[in-house]
Amino acid sequence: MKLRVLGCSGSIGGGLRTTAFLLDDDILIDGGTGVGDLTLDELRRIDHVFVTHSHLDHVACIPFLLDTVGAQRDRPVTLHASTETIANLRVHLFNWKLWPDFAAIPSEQAPYLRYQPMALGESVRLGRRTICSLPANHVVPAVGYHLDSGSASLVFTGDTAPCDALWAAVNRIENLRYLIIETAFSNLEGALAEASKHLTPDLLAGELGKLRREAEIFISHLKPVDGASTMEEVRAVAAAWAPRMLEHAQVLEF
Image (cartoon, rainbow, N blue to C red; front, side, top):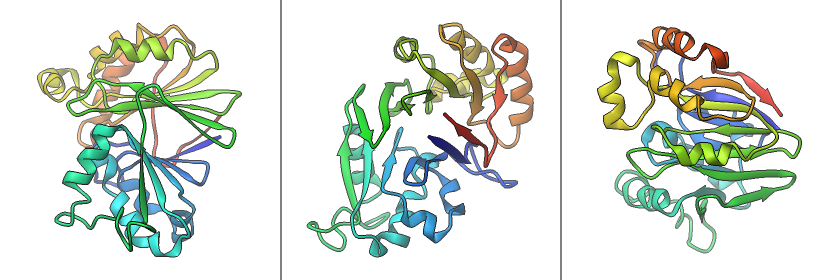
């Protein structure tokens, strides 16, 4: 499996893109603004989108993906997410007011978009690849994802505050190689992180202390304005895990 980082920033500006990953050439993990950098041919190849939660920075380009290539495909794009996230997208995004309902275009019998509810802990098998949803703790219903090639695994936490259930699941992954975990705010912004259910460097160190597996650690969701200084704080408090900043266009193979 090959994971290509299309976007991993908490916002935009200076060439940064919000959260989106291309798995091999046919699966998106979240659909933030980084999807817009794909070519038309690359967009046409996407058959599945796994959404962690309904916040705009993680779904912004899914409507444009469908609008751009829906008519050029012979089957709908399948959107996998929790029932709560699907409900949020149907009510607040694909509602004919903010954007057309692509689950009914051009017809309900042959739509551009198909929803596939995914229960927490459920696994989806696509060829030799297995994708399983993981617990997360956010202000809206949210999950992370465990991506397993058979020989190695990658975990993406999505947006989360401290979450013991996440680590209970991660620690059961025997072939874990990579962990992508968010740190959205600096330690000085602890109150904002608590209110919005994100991690700070200090909270991150506490969460990594629950990890019982060896893995390469990458930090995502840093903000453009203070991301570099926040990453310095991460290195200071979490040096034992040798965390690295996840980079736009980075590729992880496993």
